[in-house]
Length: 568
Image (cartoon, rainbow, N blue to C red; front, top):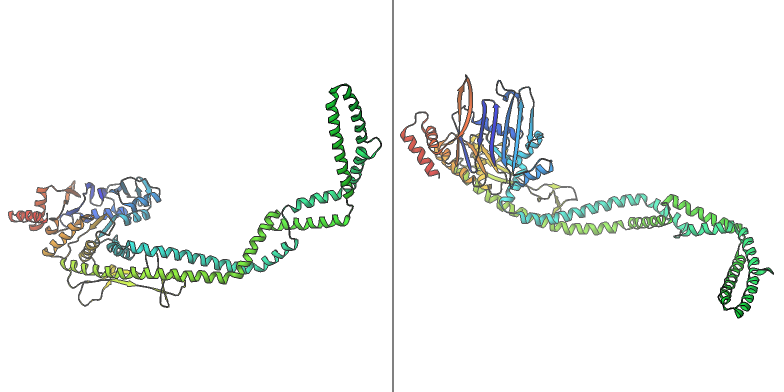
């Protein structure tokens, strides 16, 4: 709700500060005193363009500031969070208009763009009269209003469940088709690469083993000579290490018979003899296996070069080459099996599309039932508000499409659909006999529009999420009897919204829960507009003035009291 409004140096206003209340706030005042100026100031808070002509003569700038209670208004809270504005239960919007030209805007004391004010305005205020900020004139709001009125959220959620499943299937099909195209384009290359890798047939760890074998072959002569020399030193020569250790062991055997301390040394020597024997046998065996084969060395080198080339071309290591080989094998197989895979997904799509279509049709049927109820209710209320012989229709459109990526299919026809179904609706109305209904934004202007909006809002009140409604000159062209009906409608609507309405009719003013009067005064030769909240006795006087003009009679005072009493 709009808690307070501060206006400084704006047109005829020097400075006013007004606190509005919940429920029905009525503004009255004589013609030309500046009632609509206050509404225009509110309009600036929701993004309307400003002119330096708005700045009061002699002032440097005009200031308009509104303080809103946004507790529970999740749309506003989400907007503030998404755009990095401070969040609390209060929202402060301020416009400053410079006499030199240009204006500045602030949201919770942070600089803001006009586009942000307009976005916020969509979540805060519905302004009816001479202004454009009217949610019901925006076609995109009609479907949501109808769904909210009919409590169709459960049907919409059921539809969306199938909608999103189908969307994932469409995305998967697109991905598969794109992959198919790419795979077919690359299949020849993949097959060539697979043959190249398979021709070499690399094995994990093979390069390290080849390098070891090449190293051995390259040093075969050295290996032969040194192992032969080792065998001779250790075992083959007359004074070999093996023979010398045998002699040492025999000596230790004699010594241990004399002194037992040599027994352990004899054992150690026996162990050494065994080790030398094993080393000698290994060396002799190794020496006998040494190959001197330039041909084998060349084949190893050639094999190594082939493996290193694969590493360079396909990943940097044999493990990565083998991993790449598996990948292209899958791509080759996929390219060969795409048609079958695509058919499987297309079959699943048809099954899921049938479910999505069923939900969309049930949702559409329920919407048409709700639309019929809304139409009858609105026509009834319009009649009460003095607009006889009106016709109100909710026009449905289900648009066909040639795209096979459609979420709804009826027979052989595909239909456009979004997350809220395949219905596109718009409110149409006719207020004169013999005229066909036209789109709501094209109906007559002025008080008739305000009464149409009032009728719509009365029917859709519970489903409309905007907290503030402003009606400027809602009583234009209506009689006293109808004015009372308008007052009742406004009072009922104020159970769901904060209402701020300008009126000249006492029958409407009598329903006010908070009554404000705008007055024009002359100070220092200049006109000033002011606004103040009326006390109960002042209300009687103001409504009496609306009844009889400046010449207030006892009868008009009594009539004013009766209007207030009956309205409550």
